[in-house]
Length: 114
Length: 116
Image 1 (cartoon, rainbow over the protein chains, first blue to last red):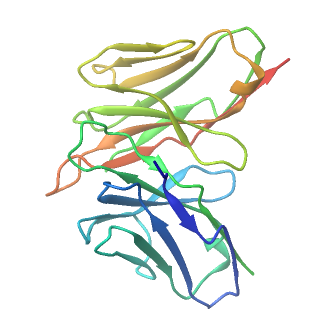
Image 2 (image 1 turned 60 degrees about the vertical axis):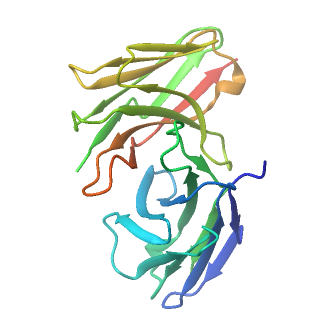
């Protein structure tokens, strides 16, 4: 079974630009979660998508947005990039409604804003 | 919202000794508590979890205990080995409005170093 895949692995952008990060969940998983992990810090919840809808978002400004496609893959967009957006962005998926509550994480996209 | 506190932030243990990491949570309705291990440059991986209807769970050298009354849970690693060196995160499943208990809130992590 393929795991959660994220692309690109690394992304370098200039301040003010936009970044698009992609995530493909495990087959059969309908819920996708995005987390930001700044260097040396913990995992901060960004967004949760399920069945194509945004279900919840964390304490981040509106320039962090995303969507989920009919095949349950997801995209995270960060507009007007700031230096402090530099971080590892992790995507996780879960089979909503399943007995397994745990999330499976992808390897992340390391975004560097210069 | 839910708040999860984790201690200590760093922990050094002699190889073969035990390591204990503790977390407290604020939402008394939380019902699921996983622990993740993140090795340097890798993804967080689920190593053990516990649900609120159980007080303790063990998997080989790893165990987790839950005290619902005190709202804290702990990770215990016995007979530590060098490959146990990593950052460990606790988490609690948080109730979200209108759509069930779906969000995991993570602690700030513990960097565990096993000294050979």
